[in-house]
Amino acid sequence: MSGTSWTLWVQPLSDTLLQLLWQLGVLGALAAVLLHTLRHSAARLRYAVCALVLLLSLMLAALQFVARWAEVQTPSAVPAAQAIWGSGAINAQSHSAVQAQQSEEPDPWAMQRPWRQGLAWAWLLGVALMSLRLLAGVACVARWRRRSRPAPALWQSRLDQLARRMGMGLSVELRLLPAAVDVAAGPFTVGWWRPVVLLPAGLLTGLPTPLLEALLAHELAHVRRWDYLAHLLQKVVEALLFFHPVIWWLSRRLRIERELVADALAAEQLGAPRQLAEALQALAVGPQAPALAAAAQSGELAQRVRALIRRSPAVGDGPRLLCALLLLSLLAGSLLLPLVGVQSATAQAAVARGAPAAPLAEGRILLADLTLASSHALVLDADSGEVLLARDAQQAAPIASISKLMTALVVLDARQDLQQQLSVSSEDVRASPFSSASLRPGQRLSREAALTLMLQSSDNRAAQLLARRYPGGLAAFERATQDKARSLGLQTAELRHPTGAPSSSRASAADVARLLEAAASEPVVRQATGAARVRVLVDGKPIESIHSNPLVGAPGWPMLLAKTGFTQAAGRCVALQMRLQGRRLSVVLLGAPDAAQREADLQRIRDALQG
Image (cartoon, rainbow, N blue to C red):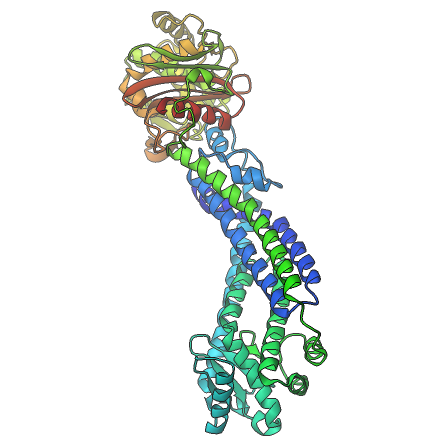
């Protein structure tokens, strides 16, 4: 699977599934406590608990997936939702940091992808099988409905009278199942828009009329409560969250409480609960109804009969209100955690996409007041030379791959043919283990393509190849870099190596700004460093190169050129020019602890300048 497809759905899905393992367990424990507390209350309260917790489980899964999807859609956003919900076995590093590393060090997700992809595909297979099971149930119910015939007018009239007594304005049809398709001992209800009660024909003569009327009243209670639709939605939740035992336990409890609620409603209308209890006992030996039917013989029969006969006194309004408030407060508290995570992740993503930050009480923040994670910082107006921010800007520090800007200038100064085909050698591979384009010995690409890979995705082998093919070789290239540094007036720069990997590749933020300005005058450099994605030919075949800075190309980040750098000694570095509020600004940040904090520094600077 390609890295793009991994980022788009496998990573968010696998992350969500892992988090749900413990989160649904917590919700299940909460539901168990509430159900135990309400064990002597009306069944409708316990039914509400089960239904709300199932709905909450589905919402929790959806919110998490959307939040994680947003993270990969806006890779520069710090994954706040992941930090809030916990990372479990997942690396808590932000996705922006991962993408920034892809061009300068091995992808930390690469070792985890196979089993995570297996997890995602296993979930999809499970959902597919559960969906087929659900569709088979729907088809079965539809088949029984088609093969039924209208009930005698006398029984249809009795059903209509029961419906009017229960205050139902919906027309319910009574149909008989022939003996050849007698799948249930008692009646069952199918459909929600045009509900039908299907009755085995043998019950018309095999069951006393009062008992059969009690069973029909139970089915009408299901119709009145739209239980068929609720049961269908419950099956959808089961299909999506099939992997967790809490969902199956909740679903079973929901079915039990649903039947108890229908029993209570039917007994209230009949005024004879024992009549319904006797009818249920008469059905105890029969087969069960189809899975998607709302049926009188479903649920825990003994529990239902005891509830009808004993008729324990109802809980007063005060205790019921207290239980309801407790339920709502706990559910609201459970919802708050993922909602805060989604809002935080959305806010971070909005900043990454360039949405303006919320106005601050004091309006514009002075750059001098900013708190930055980077050790060295410089912000200046590239046209006027006005320094807007300087933090240890004159002190030399390792700059890693930012020195590739110097490599590009030296190569371009040699005026070599940019279309000349260069061949990657084993020496290039040995000298530079990392290659974002996975260049291999014997592959051929133009000098311009090598420049693009070096500047855009920070390919080390491309830099090594360009230096090796410099007139006079590597020794001449090293002398040329020193001469170029003197001509640019760089006072602290030591930039001899083409990749900048050694810790000896050093410069101050002020010198990097001078180097950045010189690089901005070269069209080849601007084109390579200012595009989010480019295609180059390697062995005559196009490959896509992705910029090492995920902010390039993001809305709200009008980059003119940008170059990142990373080594253990240098930390996370960036040098860029962007046009903001009509000004061409140069920004240099060196020594940030990680890519996420480096990008957060950039966002603080941009927001302060926008006011």
